[in-house]
Image (cartoon, rainbow, N blue to C red; front, side, top):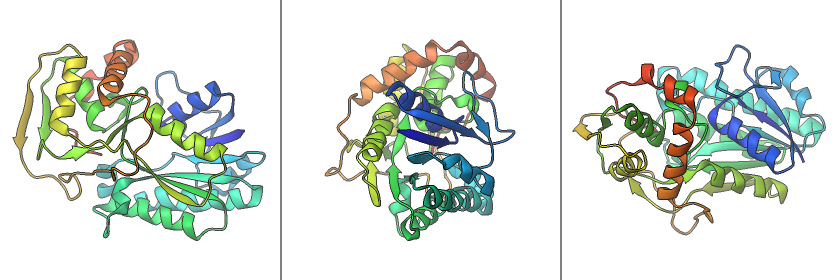
Amino acid sequence: MKVLVTGATGFLGSRASRLLEEHGHEVVRLGRPGGSERAGVTADVRSDAGDPASRELIADCNAVLHFAGIPDPARAREDPARAVRENVGTTLNLLEGCLEHGAGLVYPSTVRAALVPPADPYAHSKRLGEEACRLHEAPTLVARLTSVYGPGQVAWEGATGAIASFAARALEGEPIVIVGDPERSRDFVYVDDALTAIEARVAEGRWNETVLIASGRSTPLRIAAELVRDAAGSSVPIETPGGELPAGENESYQAAPEAPLPLNLSLEEGIRRYVDWLQNQPAAQHATRPRMTRKGATRE
C-alpha cells in the first residue's frame, strides 16, 4: 500500500516511515517547513499538514498516518490554542483530503484522552482530535498510545519521554532525577511493537475504530529508571526529590489488562535494544550533552 506519513521527521513518524518501507510499502514523508532537522532523517515534501494544498499529497494513497502535531504536554500547556490548531485543525484538513481521495486516516492519540475530563491541555487537544475523526465521513482509526519508547527517540532532539530522558542521563553519567512521585506508573510499549500493531489494522481495513495500543503491564518510573541504568552499565544515582508537578504529570496511566498487545519484546529487552541503539548513534550520543538539566522526565 501507499502511505502518507505526516510528522515524518519526528520520532514516531520517522520510525513508522522506515518500518513501512522495510515491509514493502510505498511511503511519502511529509515534514513541516522549517522544522528541526534530525540526524539521518529527511522529508520527501516540506509542507504544513494544515495547509489545504497538502491534501493533494493524499492522491493515490491508501492511508495517512498523521504523526504531525504537538506531542508534548509542556508545549501544550504553554500554548493551548496552538495545541488545538496542531492536533485538531491539521487533522480536520487531512480528513477532508482523505474523503476526497478515498483514503483512511490514522490518528495517534493518547491514553490520557480517555479521561473525563481530560487531565491537561495536551490530553484535551488530543480528545478533540479524536472527536473530529469520529464525526467525519472519512475512514479513521484512532490509536490511543501509552508510553512509546525506542530507537529514534533522542533527548537532544526534544524527546520528553521518561525512558529517553533516563537513558540520556545514564549514558552521560548524570544522575537520573524523577521529580514528583517515583512510584507513579506507565505502560511502556516498544516503538516497533506499537507501529506494527497500527500497520496490521490498516492493512486489514479496520477503520472507524478506537484502539488502545498498550502492553497491559504497569511499571513505576523508579523501576524503569533502574532497568535503563542496568542496560547502560551505569552506576549513576537515581534521585527522587519529590516536588509538585503540573496537572496530569504526577498521575499513573495504566492500560486495561484485558487489552494488551501481543508484544515481541519485554520491557527489559526493549530497553536494552534502545540503549544499544543510542550507544551506536554517535550523533545522538554527542548531542545529548547540552540538553541535560536537573529536571526529571514526566511525560507519558
